[in-house]
Amino acid sequence: MSLEDLREELSKVVDATDIFPRDYQKDGCVLEIRADADKIEAVAEATRDADFFLECITGLDFTNGPQVIYHFNAFSNLSRVLVRVQLARNQSLPTISSIYDAAIWYEREVFDLFGIHFDNHPDLRRILLPEDADFHPLLKDFGKVHAFRSTEEIYDEPDA
Amino acid sequence: MTNQMLEPITEQTYYLNMGPQHPSTHGVLRLFLKLDGEYIVEADPIIGYGHRGHEKMAESHLYEQFLPNSSRMDYLSGLLFNHGYVAAVEKMAGIEVPPRAEYIRVICAELNRISSHLLWFGTYIMDLGGFTPFLYCFDDRENILDILDHVSGSRLTYSYCRFGGVAKDLDDEFISATRQFIERLRSRWDDYHNLVTKNVIFIHRAKDVGVINRELALRFGCTGPILRGAGVAYDIRKAEPYSVYPELDFEIPTGTAGDALDRYMVRLQEMEQSLRIVEQALDRLPDGPIKAAVPHKVRPPKGDYYFAVESARGALGFYIVSDGTSYPYRLKARVPSYGNLQVLTDVLPGTLVADTISILGSIDIVVPEVDR
Image (cartoon, rainbow over all chains, first blue to last red):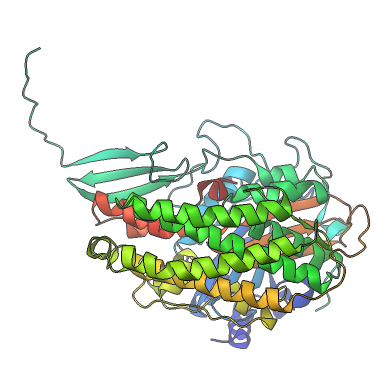
């Protein structure tokens, strides 16, 4: 399935205004989707049906709440898709581990390092840190960081 | 002491800890296995023993200060990680790299890929009980380490790339040593194939063992030789061309079944392709500067960027969020071994404990890279 088909499938799931084309040469992705937490399962199903694999899940911490970034990619040329989910502080989001097995470990990592909870995850244990750790090290209020910013300070509104 | 008869075992299954200190886990990996006799029922790889927090370190260091960290994630293909990190920041900051520097990077990166594969080759066969190839491989690998040591000053954790170029220019000694090495390794293939590839014991240990097909690789996000062993010709060097790879002629070797033998064959052929790349790059090596003029502190513009390179183990990605200062706001390394290791939870159940060694070896993980 091509990227255009995926885009069409995704437009059934999220608002068309939440899909932004991005320039691969500029930032390494061809498509960005901004999804709400409850849409992520539907988005993941659409990418799975389009024969994409889950490349990684990343957490980001901002003053106005954490973000979870999903990168999907296909075994073909230049097709990386970025999905951005903005969360409120202490908000949880559904797991996509029933859709992609790779998500089991990636979600455990995000939980471990950011304390973001994934609902219905089959095995949400710490993965990199010891079981008895009582902190989430990649949060910006932990340890030494250079800056703690809000999303507005980093992202200009992408032109649709 | 009196001999006591043990009570008959009533439980059918039991647990076995393999690692974290086990010679064939190549690093501090612990496999928590649930066994039924000799068969594995459940496998749970437990990682994190080598977690150093590279991603956290990045948040309080300048982009330049993170350079040495990059090659310490994967100590066997450090230069490929170094190249990936440098290229990601260059793309963000819009730094043009002189062609000579790009060629030097590709030459050194491919030599590093060969040395990584050679080490894998030697240790994999040693895990299966063959000691001799290990010594041959380390002899060859030593050559590469000497060559790279000559130009970069380090044998393992190379921090050779700089933003806008490389640290030191190649000299004639490097070029002649590399050409000699290419000849030498090419003359070795027959030995390797006679020693290992045609060895019936090896074939029995590797054929139809640990099958990872395309569908499984897709579910777990496996990349690199594992994916290519399953017949998918996916290589970042071709799929998302970077550096000077588009100008060079090489092929992507693939397997068919996706078993340990296919992964073995793919890696051996990849070394031959890497030799081709090095040879072509040496022939075409342009003259010119080796480093562009770059400001003392790199300040990439605001935004986020994902840059992928093909490491020796698969698709390596650096996802960097910049807030416009000279410190990365967040740096995430998408390491190939992470997905490649997780697939064991699906592959190991149903196999024999003895095959675990063969499967784990054929996957070629580097645990410090998984732990970061």
